[in-house]
Amino acid sequence: MTDRAPGSVTRPLTVAIFGESYLPYLSGVTVATDSLARGLRAAGHRVLLAVPRPADGRGPEGSGAAGPNPEMAWLPSYQAPPPAPPGYRMPWPMPSAALAAVRDARPDVVHAQSPFVSGVMARRVARRVGAPLVFTHHTRFGDYRHYLGPLAAPGGAAVMAYLRAFEAGCAAIVAPAADLADEVASRLRARGGRSRTVVRAIPTGLDLDRLRALPRVDPRPEAGWSPDAVVVVSVGRLAREKRTDLLVDAFAIAAAARPDLRLLLVGDGPLRREIEERASSGALAGRVHLTGRLSRLDALARASGSDLFAFASQTETQGLVLAEALAVGLPVVALDGPGVRGSVRDGVDGSVISAGPGEADASLARAIVEVASDTARRAAWSRAAADGADRFSASVWIERIVELYRLVARPAG
Figure 1 (cartoon, one colour):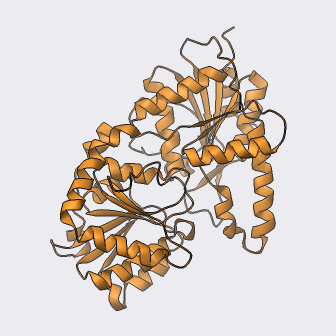
Figure 2 (tube, one colour):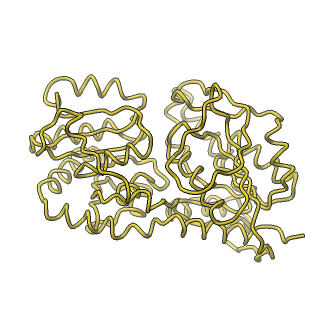
């Protein structure tokens, strides 16, 4: 992979960021998009954020990211059909005043957060104004093919073929973790020839000052738990691709060994009703509490009042919530998988568990019990998590992103 020669752009940049979804829908991608836009503005750059307009004129609500508001270019939008969750707005693929405003701004760089509808818009704008297209690979799309039902196999293959073509047309690709960067670079090499696409592993950063200032909210009174309950928390979408069902299975095994364990699930999703039904009876009755959808900072405040963060997803690019948990001083127990070791330092601020087929729930349960039973280890890992969080700094992230922009940006004319 050969980097392009640096351009001569040294002035503040004008950056157009295109998103497939946006606030108030809360996800790792929408948080990263909002944080990127605000971080670039705080660094002195002009940012136009082209994202789907919220429904009914609602404000987008904040993600909790620091920094000045970007210039908004609201794309005409609609509520995506199931299996997309409520509040997930998609942009219409049509001409609009927002697109015209972005073109008129003559951005130095166009940065796509998705390869699909908004990615196509971003590519067209980049070609129209002669700017490089940068793409952040937020999602392992192949891991979501189960939503296609009987079309999962051919649909998944078609998506990957499209993705490879989109990647090849980018000046640069940002992967939030090193393992994903390697996968992207391998796909580019497999197309043959010598790719000029620059691939960088740049983890999404966090506003550490804001996270460290969060109040610790004790979840026990709201859930009706005793003050001495040991609370295992997980934050995220309640969905099969996040393996929330496996996490509940593991907790059930762990709770049989440690009756004082409790599970706090922060978030919402298609598995909520199934989990609520399971948690309302039998051995789990009274031991599992679902908060439903919360704002990002409210979710993290409740998480920080817990004792241990558990993570079972195998579909992550980075697992931003892992970095957030560590930043608020939560020790982590996580199944090994994509993006996990880029955040969790095994044996330092958490435990990363490797498990064979059919062993994941039991392996995760054993680790939860071991860490929950060792208060000294939890305290040491909590200190290490908080002390080591500087590696997630948003300022470092923004510096690396701007460095990449300058590498591929056209010379100032």
